[in-house]
Length: 274
Image: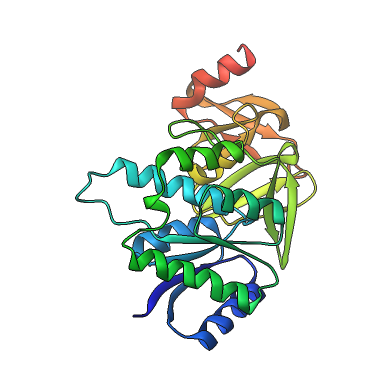
Protein backbone atom coordinates (compact mmCIF):
# COMPACT_ATOMS: atom_id res chain seq x y z
CA UNK A 1 0.00 0.00 0.00
CA UNK A 2 1.40 3.37 -1.03
CA UNK A 3 1.88 6.12 1.59
CA UNK A 4 0.61 9.58 0.65
CA UNK A 5 3.10 12.28 1.57
CA UNK A 6 3.86 15.99 1.47
CA UNK A 7 7.32 17.53 1.19
CA UNK A 8 7.57 20.95 2.86
CA UNK A 9 10.89 22.76 2.51
CA UNK A 10 11.85 26.26 1.44
CA UNK A 11 14.88 24.95 -0.47
CA UNK A 12 14.14 23.70 -3.99
CA UNK A 13 17.25 21.52 -4.04
CA UNK A 14 16.26 19.79 -0.81
CA UNK A 15 12.75 19.07 -2.14
CA UNK A 16 14.13 17.73 -5.39
CA UNK A 17 16.69 15.55 -3.60
CA UNK A 18 14.13 14.00 -1.26
CA UNK A 19 11.58 13.49 -4.07
CA UNK A 20 14.24 11.70 -6.14
CA UNK A 21 15.08 9.34 -3.27
CA UNK A 22 11.42 8.59 -2.58
CA UNK A 23 10.70 7.89 -6.24
CA UNK A 24 13.67 5.52 -6.38
CA UNK A 25 12.53 3.60 -3.29
CA UNK A 26 8.87 3.43 -4.30
CA UNK A 27 5.84 3.02 -2.10
CA UNK A 28 5.45 6.76 -1.41
CA UNK A 29 3.11 8.98 -3.40
CA UNK A 30 4.17 12.64 -3.03
CA UNK A 31 0.82 14.38 -3.52
CA UNK A 32 2.09 17.96 -3.14
CA UNK A 33 5.05 20.11 -2.15
CA UNK A 34 5.22 23.38 -0.22
CA UNK A 35 7.83 26.03 0.47
CA UNK A 36 6.88 27.37 3.91
CA UNK A 37 5.00 26.61 7.09
CA UNK A 38 1.85 28.48 6.09
CA UNK A 39 1.59 26.40 2.91
CA UNK A 40 2.20 23.30 5.02
CA UNK A 41 -0.88 23.90 7.16
CA UNK A 42 -3.05 24.55 4.09
CA UNK A 43 -1.76 21.51 2.19
CA UNK A 44 -2.25 19.20 5.16
CA UNK A 45 -5.83 20.44 5.53
CA UNK A 46 -6.40 19.93 1.79
CA UNK A 47 -4.78 16.53 1.20
CA UNK A 48 -4.87 14.79 4.61
CA UNK A 49 -1.65 12.89 3.87
CA UNK A 50 -0.34 9.90 5.79
CA UNK A 51 3.07 11.51 6.18
CA UNK A 52 4.68 14.96 6.07
CA UNK A 53 8.39 15.57 5.54
CA UNK A 54 8.66 18.88 7.36
CA UNK A 55 11.65 21.22 7.30
CA UNK A 56 12.42 22.82 10.67
CA UNK A 57 13.85 26.15 9.49
CA UNK A 58 11.37 27.95 7.22
CA UNK A 59 10.11 31.53 6.81
CA UNK A 60 6.68 32.44 8.15
CA UNK A 61 6.09 29.39 10.34
CA UNK A 62 8.89 26.98 11.14
CA UNK A 63 8.30 23.24 11.30
CA UNK A 64 7.56 23.18 15.01
CA UNK A 65 5.13 26.09 14.70
CA UNK A 66 3.28 24.09 12.02
CA UNK A 67 2.90 21.21 14.48
CA UNK A 68 1.70 23.66 17.14
CA UNK A 69 -0.94 25.15 14.82
CA UNK A 70 -2.17 21.74 13.64
CA UNK A 71 -2.57 20.59 17.23
CA UNK A 72 -4.57 23.70 18.12
CA UNK A 73 -6.93 23.15 15.17
CA UNK A 74 -7.23 19.46 15.94
CA UNK A 75 -8.13 20.10 19.59
CA UNK A 76 -10.72 22.70 18.58
CA UNK A 77 -12.75 20.25 16.51
CA UNK A 78 -15.27 17.73 17.83
CA UNK A 79 -13.97 14.16 17.81
CA UNK A 80 -16.10 12.94 14.90
CA UNK A 81 -15.14 15.95 12.75
CA UNK A 82 -11.40 15.82 13.38
CA UNK A 83 -9.31 14.27 10.61
CA UNK A 84 -6.38 12.18 11.88
CA UNK A 85 -3.16 14.14 11.86
CA UNK A 86 -0.32 12.90 9.67
CA UNK A 87 2.88 11.36 10.87
CA UNK A 88 5.78 13.78 10.78
CA UNK A 89 9.41 13.35 9.78
CA UNK A 90 11.40 16.49 10.55
CA UNK A 91 14.18 17.51 8.19
CA UNK A 92 16.98 19.74 9.39
CA UNK A 93 20.62 20.62 8.86
CA UNK A 94 21.17 21.00 12.61
CA UNK A 95 21.51 18.12 15.08
CA UNK A 96 20.07 20.13 17.98
CA UNK A 97 16.64 20.27 16.34
CA UNK A 98 16.80 16.61 15.39
CA UNK A 99 17.49 15.60 18.97
CA UNK A 100 14.57 17.66 20.25
CA UNK A 101 12.16 16.15 17.73
CA UNK A 102 13.38 12.60 18.34
CA UNK A 103 13.30 12.88 22.13
CA UNK A 104 9.62 13.76 22.16
CA UNK A 105 8.74 10.80 19.94
CA UNK A 106 8.24 12.45 16.58
CA UNK A 107 8.19 9.71 13.97
CA UNK A 108 11.75 10.40 12.95
CA UNK A 109 14.14 13.03 11.66
CA UNK A 110 16.46 13.37 8.69
CA UNK A 111 19.65 15.40 8.59
CA UNK A 112 20.58 17.26 5.43
CA UNK A 113 22.02 16.31 3.03
CA UNK A 114 19.71 13.30 2.95
CA UNK A 115 21.14 9.81 3.26
CA UNK A 116 19.27 7.06 1.41
CA UNK A 117 19.64 4.54 4.24
CA UNK A 118 18.28 7.00 6.83
CA UNK A 119 15.30 7.80 4.59
CA UNK A 120 14.59 4.07 4.27
CA UNK A 121 14.80 3.64 8.06
CA UNK A 122 12.44 6.56 8.66
CA UNK A 123 9.92 5.20 6.17
CA UNK A 124 10.07 1.78 7.81
CA UNK A 125 9.13 3.36 11.14
CA UNK A 126 6.21 5.12 9.45
CA UNK A 127 4.95 1.88 7.89
CA UNK A 128 5.24 0.09 11.22
CA UNK A 129 3.17 2.74 12.98
CA UNK A 130 0.54 2.76 10.23
CA UNK A 131 0.31 -1.04 10.35
CA UNK A 132 -0.17 -0.95 14.12
CA UNK A 133 -2.98 1.59 13.77
CA UNK A 134 -1.12 4.57 15.21
CA UNK A 135 -1.58 7.98 13.64
CA UNK A 136 1.30 10.44 13.52
CA UNK A 137 1.54 13.66 15.45
CA UNK A 138 -2.10 13.38 16.49
CA UNK A 139 -1.40 10.10 18.31
CA UNK A 140 1.21 11.60 20.59
CA UNK A 141 -0.01 12.13 24.14
CA UNK A 142 -0.63 15.79 24.87
CA UNK A 143 2.09 15.65 27.52
CA UNK A 144 4.65 14.86 24.80
CA UNK A 145 3.34 17.60 22.51
CA UNK A 146 3.60 20.04 25.41
CA UNK A 147 7.12 18.78 26.17
CA UNK A 148 8.13 19.58 22.60
CA UNK A 149 6.73 23.09 22.84
CA UNK A 150 8.52 23.68 26.15
CA UNK A 151 11.81 22.50 24.69
CA UNK A 152 11.42 25.04 21.93
CA UNK A 153 10.54 27.81 24.40
CA UNK A 154 7.14 28.05 22.76
CA UNK A 155 4.02 28.79 24.81
CA UNK A 156 1.23 26.30 25.36
CA UNK A 157 -2.07 26.38 23.53
CA UNK A 158 -3.97 29.60 24.09
CA UNK A 159 -0.91 31.86 24.45
CA UNK A 160 0.96 33.87 21.90
CA UNK A 161 3.83 32.21 20.04
CA UNK A 162 7.35 33.42 20.67
CA UNK A 163 8.41 35.88 17.99
CA UNK A 164 11.64 35.35 16.07
CA UNK A 165 14.18 38.17 16.36
CA UNK A 166 14.51 38.41 12.58
CA UNK A 167 12.22 37.91 9.61
CA UNK A 168 12.78 36.75 6.05
CA UNK A 169 12.05 39.51 3.52
CA UNK A 170 12.24 38.82 -0.21
CA UNK A 171 13.87 41.67 -2.14
CA UNK A 172 14.01 40.86 -5.84
CA UNK A 173 15.78 37.49 -6.04
CA UNK A 174 17.34 37.72 -2.55
CA UNK A 175 16.00 36.44 0.76
CA UNK A 176 17.17 38.84 3.46
CA UNK A 177 17.15 38.38 7.23
CA UNK A 178 15.84 41.60 8.72
CA UNK A 179 15.86 42.62 12.37
CA UNK A 180 12.34 43.43 13.52
CA UNK A 181 13.54 46.71 14.98
CA UNK A 182 14.59 47.84 11.46
CA UNK A 183 11.12 47.41 9.97
CA UNK A 184 9.25 50.70 9.63
CA UNK A 185 5.91 49.32 8.51
CA UNK A 186 4.18 46.62 6.47
CA UNK A 187 1.28 47.14 4.08
CA UNK A 188 -0.94 44.71 2.19
CA UNK A 189 -2.17 45.35 -1.35
CA UNK A 190 -4.05 42.75 -3.43
CA UNK A 191 -2.85 39.95 -1.17
CA UNK A 192 0.84 40.93 -1.28
CA UNK A 193 2.50 42.17 1.90
CA UNK A 194 5.13 44.88 1.39
CA UNK A 195 7.72 45.25 4.17
CA UNK A 196 9.50 48.62 4.36
CA UNK A 197 12.69 49.48 6.26
CA UNK A 198 14.64 52.75 6.26
CA UNK A 199 16.96 51.48 3.53
CA UNK A 200 15.00 49.06 1.33
CA UNK A 201 11.68 47.33 0.87
CA UNK A 202 10.65 43.81 -0.04
CA UNK A 203 7.85 41.30 0.38
CA UNK A 204 6.83 38.85 3.09
CA UNK A 205 5.75 35.29 2.32
CA UNK A 206 2.91 35.68 4.83
CA UNK A 207 -0.49 35.78 3.18
CA UNK A 208 -2.26 38.10 5.62
CA UNK A 209 -1.32 40.81 8.08
CA UNK A 210 -2.72 38.59 10.83
CA UNK A 211 -0.13 35.94 10.00
CA UNK A 212 2.62 38.55 9.92
CA UNK A 213 1.54 39.97 13.28
CA UNK A 214 1.95 36.52 14.85
CA UNK A 215 5.66 36.82 14.05
CA UNK A 216 6.10 40.40 15.22
CA UNK A 217 6.82 41.75 18.68
CA UNK A 218 3.52 43.18 20.02
CA UNK A 219 5.48 45.68 22.09
CA UNK A 220 6.78 47.28 18.86
CA UNK A 221 4.14 46.71 16.19
CA UNK A 222 0.63 48.11 16.02
CA UNK A 223 -2.06 47.63 13.39
CA UNK A 224 -2.96 51.26 12.84
CA UNK A 225 -5.26 50.46 9.91
CA UNK A 226 -6.66 47.30 8.38
CA UNK A 227 -4.10 47.63 5.58
CA UNK A 228 -1.06 48.67 7.66
CA UNK A 229 1.09 47.48 10.54
CA UNK A 230 3.53 50.07 11.90
CA UNK A 231 6.57 49.98 14.15
CA UNK A 232 5.79 52.63 16.74
CA UNK A 233 9.50 53.44 17.09
CA UNK A 234 9.59 54.50 13.43
CA UNK A 235 6.72 56.99 13.58
CA UNK A 236 8.27 60.34 12.68
CA UNK A 237 5.21 62.54 13.10
CA UNK A 238 1.53 62.31 14.03
CA UNK A 239 -0.41 64.49 11.58
CA UNK A 240 -3.92 65.72 12.50
CA UNK A 241 -6.33 65.03 9.66
CA UNK A 242 -9.92 65.92 8.91
CA UNK A 243 -12.83 65.13 11.27
CA UNK A 244 -10.55 64.41 14.26
CA UNK A 245 -8.65 61.67 12.42
CA UNK A 246 -4.88 61.29 12.12
CA UNK A 247 -2.15 60.14 9.78
CA UNK A 248 1.27 58.80 10.70
CA UNK A 249 4.34 60.04 8.86
CA UNK A 250 6.93 57.29 9.00
CA UNK A 251 10.72 57.70 8.95
CA UNK A 252 11.34 55.54 5.88
CA UNK A 253 13.12 57.28 2.99
CA UNK A 254 9.80 58.33 1.40
CA UNK A 255 8.31 59.53 4.71
CA UNK A 256 5.21 57.49 3.91
CA UNK A 257 1.94 58.74 5.36
CA UNK A 258 -0.27 56.03 6.83
CA UNK A 259 -3.91 56.56 7.88
CA UNK A 260 -5.08 55.67 11.37
CA UNK A 261 -8.49 54.03 11.32
CA UNK A 262 -11.19 55.54 13.51
CA UNK A 263 -11.26 52.34 15.54
CA UNK A 264 -7.55 52.80 16.36
CA UNK A 265 -7.65 56.52 17.16
CA UNK A 266 -8.12 55.82 20.86
CA UNK A 267 -5.09 53.52 20.86
CA UNK A 268 -3.03 56.24 19.14
CA UNK A 269 -3.95 58.74 21.86
CA UNK A 270 -2.98 56.21 24.53
CA UNK A 271 0.39 55.54 22.90
CA UNK A 272 1.37 59.21 22.65
CA UNK A 273 -0.77 60.86 25.33
CA UNK A 274 -2.62 62.99 22.77
